[in-house]
Length: 187
Ligand code: 5GP
Image (cartoon, rainbow, N blue to C red; front, side):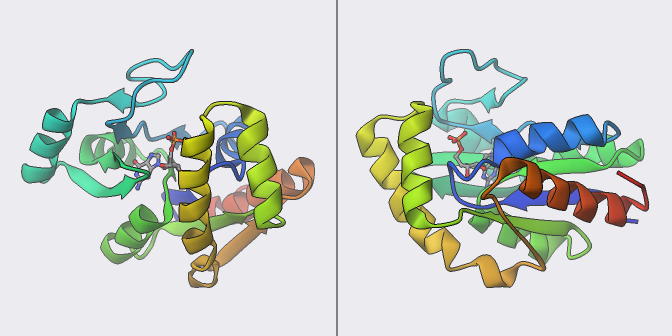
């Protein structure tokens, strides 16, 4: 039975919103808290939204092999700590990782049994509108994220499951159906 679920896709595509909905519908899922070197946004809490680390701390964890995967994204570092996965897998809880595409590839290599879902926007223009509209990043950061998104979108065919997030409710139903089927549950 699948125990690790990787949800990937470009920034601004709605991964966070979809994952919140997914976890409400399937409350046995637990979310892995990633580490990052970026600064907290307003309202983000250390240890809840991310483990916010200095570059030095992040690098130490890289050297000691504490990351399952890690990647550079828009000039910042992001990674999944082994401890986030191992404790949950050991107690039998299914774990969700919300990560970008390079990290998803590393997880695929290390854990081919993990279920990977790529969330795609209806178009690049829709993604731009959402990234600007959510107001969490300045215009330079939005452009950096869009440049990365173009490369990320080219990777969608690598993924067994692709969910296009056009209407949120439809995309959520599709995502819930994929995960529930893998868990052997009914949504
Ligand atoms: P944000 O800065 O918007 O929170 O995240 C930027 C990107 O990094 C998003 O695509 C997000 O999914 C990804 N990300 C978050 N945590 C991780 C992680 O642990 N590993 C990897 N590879 N990407 C991550």
